[in-house]
Image (cartoon, rainbow, N blue to C red):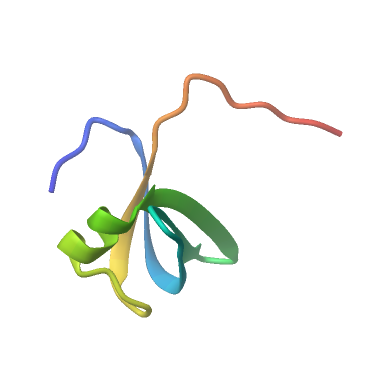
Length: 67
C-alpha cells in the first residue's frame, strides 16, 4: 500500500472500541498510542482485530504544541 502522507508509523492494534456507527482503534507505536476514529464498516471490511500489524498515516494541516 502506498500513501502520499509522509508521516507513517508501523504499529500494533491494542484495542478496538466499537460503537453504533464509528469505532476507535488504538495502535501502539513504540511508547506512543495513536487513536483513530474510523467507521464500523472500515473495521469490518479491513478485518481489523487486536494484535494486527498496521500502518498509521498522519496527514494534518496543523500541528500545535502547548506548554
